[in-house]
Image 1 (cartoon, rainbow, N blue to C red):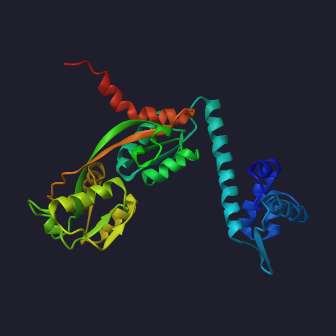
Image 2: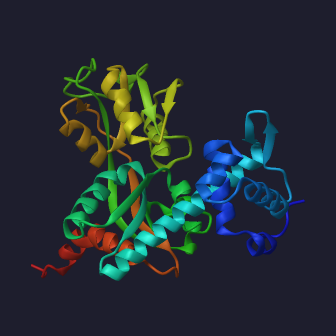
Length: 316
């Protein structure tokens, strides 16, 4: 039986977590002990204590060394997260002591990537020594990372949550959609298209039940066109762009900001197909009531600077 959280936290030490991470890297008690600067007998004793703390064996002893079992892989992953968090904590403290923000971690959905990119560029022009981490994923995943404190803020939609009241959010930008393809697509030069013209096309789409996926399906339903069956589903902007760029048969319905970025590179074009559906605005989201770090505040300022400047203009 796994002990209580209080029992684990009360008995576990940082050096034991370092040993776990080292064992995951080396698979050898001797090499792990050297990395953590303890003797091999000391490392062996520490490992027994760790397994006692968690109430489960974490490694399989073989003639080749120590191999983590399923529980071991789980514990090693969190040990590495702890080390990473401590490194981030140190960086942020250094930043605070030196008078700049230090570090910020932000999550974003695909459609908000161009806006976040512009904000990061502006932020780093003002604070060159800032460290920035960006995670791209779905709104649901990003809200989960906010809940866990893994990221400081997110550009996403709180409507996917069953408890949107847990978040502080402000609408940032509305999304319009466009259909894009390679400039080599057979319909790239067409002057006007209907969805029926794309029947049989290979579509790159968001995963099921995501907001833009629902709009994609609505477009087909309202046009009376059968939904495509063989789809490539992804939440990755890079995967989407790579597929479109390397295979002229693919098309994708994307936020206009992302479509403009792709077409601006010269390899993609917007197909002459009107998309009637509009996605709900995405939001700048933080945890309700949670303190905002100096680095996060700097990025928030960068993300909202254009809106703040617009609202400050005198009425005509």
